[in-house]
Length: 113
Image 1 (cartoon, rainbow, N blue to C red):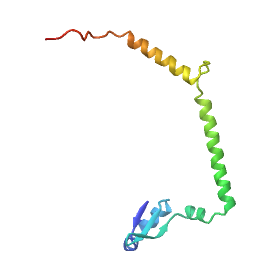
Image 2 (cartoon, helix red, strand yellow; image 1 turned 90 degrees about the horizontal axis):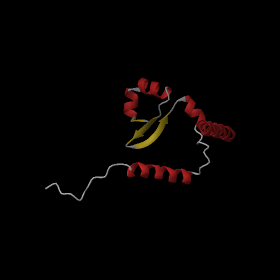
Image 3 (spheres, rainbow, N blue to C red; image 1 turned 45 degrees about the vertical axis):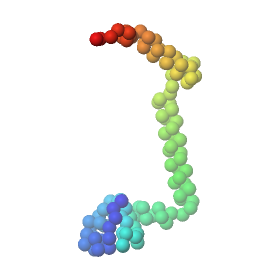
Image 4 (tube, rainbow, N blue to C red; image 1 turned 60 degrees about the vertical axis):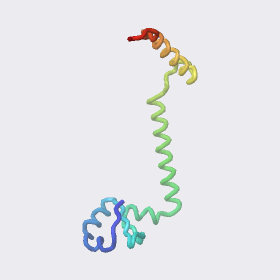
């Protein structure tokens, strides 16, 4: 989001209009107080959208999220090894402890002096 003053707007109108038509939202401020937004026609249509169209658009977005969630669940399904999450974590801890126990331990009782 770009913030411009009315003076800057007059000086660089063409550039600012190009940016807005490309989808950039531009806030126009006077004395650090917002006075207007400059947005693309597509964004402006959303402001005028009726209640039913907003609901339909929101429901369509939720449907897409549900489909994505189902696809991710299928593509990244957990292994079917009969273990609960807690049992898997316990087994993993035991495996790690076995590896740690198998490592050589330094003899801390001897002094290097």
